[in-house]
Image 1 (cartoon, helix red, strand yellow):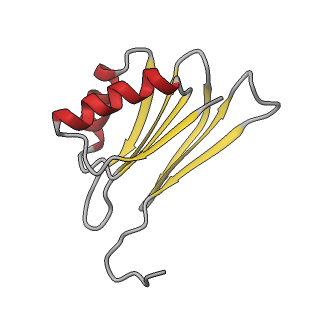
Image 2 (image 1 turned 135 degrees about the vertical axis):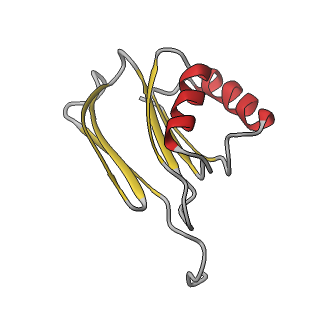
Image 3 (image 1 turned 180 degrees about the horizontal axis):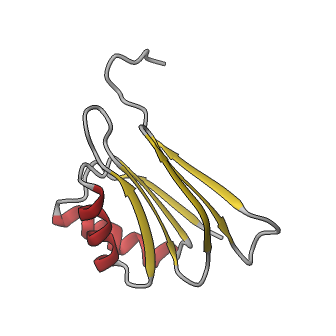
Length: 118
């Protein structure tokens, strides 16, 4: 199974949507993880579902220092077992025929303000 993860820094612009629409067929992932969607979860999910029919998406709103996160997978390739959200992250547990057991996915966004540098 291939996972594509992208810190997109917003999905509202047409060039970013086109870039994402080009990346997904090129790498053919079963799982898509996005950080810094910079939007409301309902709008992000609607936009992603229109870009990728046959995919299921979940998202968290962007607010404060949280840039928003989204996780999606191709229907039929993965089965959603569990889903949870928290202030800075979105998690899900899925089953895949490629794996021996469930896969837990946690997409966390750490705010960049007032954070120590490397």
